[in-house]
Length: 242
Image (tube, rainbow, N blue to C red; front, side, top):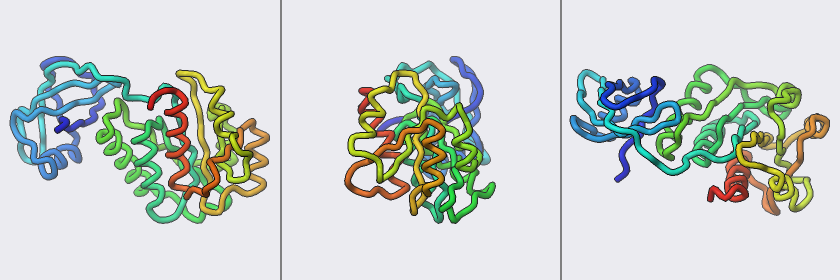
């Protein structure tokens, strides 16, 4: 069984004492049933460290760093930001979880014309907890950012979110493959997914004007919570990560 992984903010070194955050400590004790001398992995600043639990008391878990672990590449060679339209219910939870598992570097909620939901602080906090848990489960070296919500207009006006591939069922066949052929290692890429009713004509026009590329995701129509995962998987294949 693989050793459980926990993220901390502080840089680590051999023999350093590290304290798990309260939520991680509860998970370690109550769910994983970890105790004294059990081994865990501490991930900080992109590095993984093996550690031994030295104290479990009153809801707190302390561990001692033993040594750095040399692991294979745990991050996509392309930095992907998912621009995901805000959707109702728990669908955005699925988007965050699967995008993180597949290697996204950031997920940004986007308010589109057909987004019939809003984002409050509690939702944002939950999505960030989901991202943290998914990153640990999938053996990532970083916790992807779940950004503050923005409008589609703001996303299209932000030059830092380029190049950008927009998932659209009306795009030409083979357009995603053509767009991905131009990708290079260490490049940034944004992928944009619309709400259940798709993008409006005005939103597509704004994307065209901002230099985004429309991409067809095949003959089946994917749910909004599936599309980003499909696009990230296509990038992973294109870059030889899979």
